Length: 68
Image: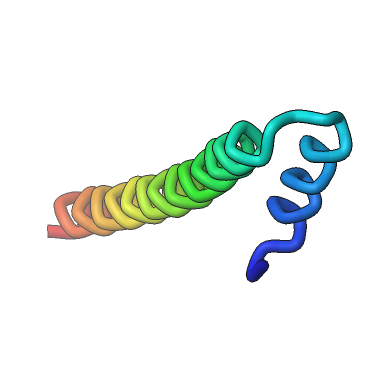
């Protein structure tokens, strides 16, 4: 019940006259997809930040070599 979207989805499946176990499994799969998407988004953001950090370092190194 912590995620109302998943709970509502389970209730929708039960309203479609699916057995309770099938509705729970469908809700679990939906929950897993949501969690996976959040983790993927987190890692993608971390990768973007790391690339930006690397670009900043390489620009700094290039400036240092030119002035030296």
